[in-house]
Length: 417
Image 1 (cartoon, rainbow, N blue to C red):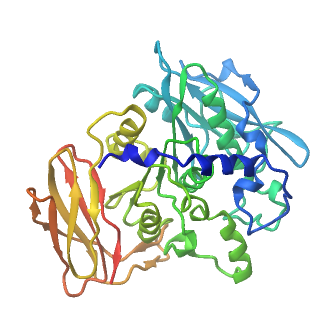
Image 2: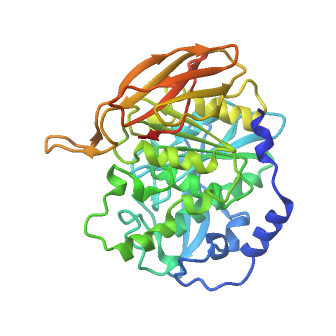
Image 3: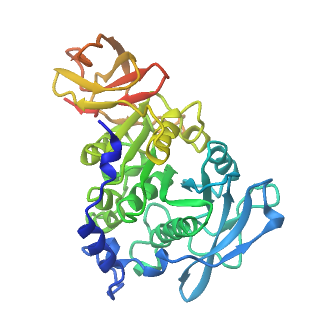
């Protein structure tokens, strides 16, 4: 099955979205209105750029670009922009950092080396030093993130998420205007909070051709990890915060998406990645890496998450073969998984738990974690591309990984019993 078919968009829906975006609407805190009606149309226009050559990192250029005003004050986002040498327009990627992160020039270089124009911006009003390190406030800084949507009671235009989403879309507009970029081949990837943001934006900015959220996903308040712990917050506050849950946006979208996570992530538990995949599975893939560490390098290293680059190459460059695809998901304690793959699948592995998916944290531990995962090899039937799944009697939850000849992983949904 060719994933490119999922990029076919309904013209009427696009025109309808454009009308929404450019309509005059109230920007009060309306938790029922679609985000597309609340964004400033300015985000789809080309921003003014301010180059900072003294902060360049080799061939990767440093710059500020104009973003939306914050409390009446003009703001700019700092970014690194890399453009590989080419005699024709190239595909491009928007790179969205996570919590505690910054604009990473090294991330830009990875994508440049793979033949992509790439931009990585700072979303919390920071600029880096001459070495490309550190996080320093500047005179045009906008808002900074406050906990987990803890500024939800502020006016919409003063909330960090509103500005972060806007800054990302403006970066896309910047790329799309560049003669070095093929505007019809731009994707997005983000790590942790960047996964939240990139998946959300994929449901808002229909110009995007692919999205690759790492760790962060939708259905945040179902997470068994940090994100699901709202402490003493009232139900009313939590319901307001759900305005920014990415699933509210991407569940209505159709951008080809690759969901990437570990099975024991402290922040974003496997069930929410699986739920996000479930509501997008007609145009999505999922790759779960057992015991994957949480962090920026772990979420971008080509040798650790090669599926990211294979997926982008397939969608944005038409490079084949792409990732394999699960065509029949497992269910219950005994079922058959079916798949499609142009590359031979060499291994099928069952990962399961004997306790319900819950997280615990000892005083001596830094992060919460789920109960141990156990694994069991499954027999492949290469002729009809199927795997028979029978889980142990004590199993309370499981998923299946298929590994192809290249070492690429594709995963089934997480099944809770």
